[in-house]
Image (cartoon, rainbow, N blue to C red; front, side, top):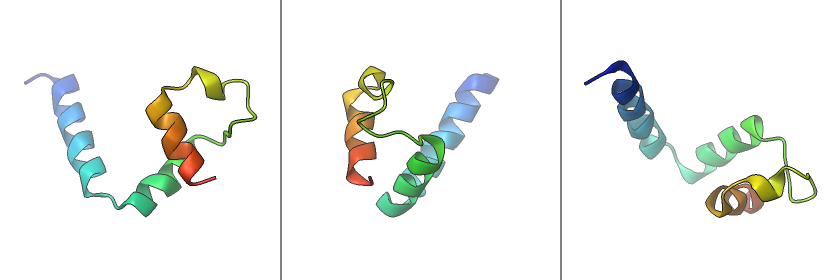
Length: 55
């Protein structure tokens, strides 16, 4: 296993352990964005959906 694979494995495990509310808080901290932002349409639909659930 290389470094990138190890980091991905740790992150996946950490994310899976978070509640939906905790994931939402993290998303909003990272993405101060909503559907009115011009960059919003460039995000994957799954991420757009996650963000819109917590706006």
